Image (cartoon, rainbow, N blue to C red):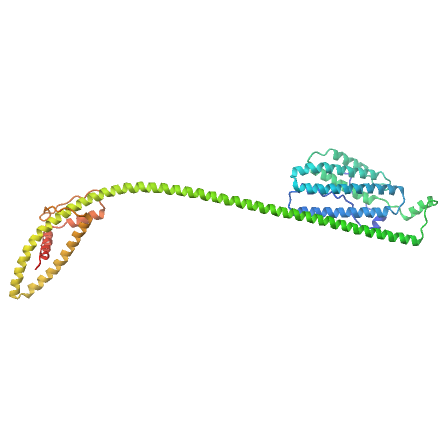
Length: 444
């Protein structure tokens, strides 16, 4: 607002020299900030409430100071001003009660509901304050160059044009109203002592003459009254501060309880989600294991069928080979018996002849043949274990020949190689082998 501003620098009024400096301000100029920032942390709310209590104390101190000054004058204009200030003080107290009610409502309302509930009351408060300023401005107690009537009219017009929810405009009007109060506090003219004597001379028939003793008594009474007022103000400020601290503590405890409850609920939901996820994963794992088991079972069944067919074919082949070996072994046993008889006759003859060299050679041959027989028996036992019991068919087809027996399909390579290596033996070697078996099969 262009016309609202501080007046030019001039001499201090008398009442500002007598009393301590104090700023007159409305106790509601921080209310709008509280409404706009109600969602901020509790610490911001505490600072705003503390500032509001300080402003309230300043307002009370200023009112008491003005009451003290105006009670010492009998001017009609000052009397009217005193009445106006008393009315304004009552309005301030009413608005203070409304502010406390609004603050209690702010705790339980949302931001939009708070704005809707506070804005009409703020507008009413501002309109009352501006009307009070306009009424005071009509009194002839200000400096000539101080003209606040136009500013008041402009603010009233702006207040009438405020839209719903326009808190920025309300804050600006509230700040301008505070500036007007400051101008009023600085622009009040207190009649000097010479002016008071002039007025006394004009109405000397109606004036009272006080001696020094009465003046001293009156001064002491005023001092006592000021002390009592100061003590009441201190008590009121202490009560307001205690109430604010108690309210902040309740809000803090409620906020902590709500945070703890939300944390517990969140932890509970998280645990439930973890449990549900764990159950789902367990079900998926079991289903996967079941599928793997079924697939493995099908695969093993197929492999077992193929392995069984291969093993049966191999066992049949080994049974045939064992049958052939058993027949050849039986034939050679008979031949070995004959050879043993001849060997016994020769050994007896040699013994009679005392040919010790031949006996040693025969012993070495016997040891060699014993090892060969043991190896042959081991191989026969191995074939018997592989092929199981089988009937013996006498058929000697391997003694005078070297047949190649075909290997069945799907036989492991190491078994096929072992069989081929055992069969690929010359006829002369096989003859010597069976002769050795026959020699060591017959007792001496």
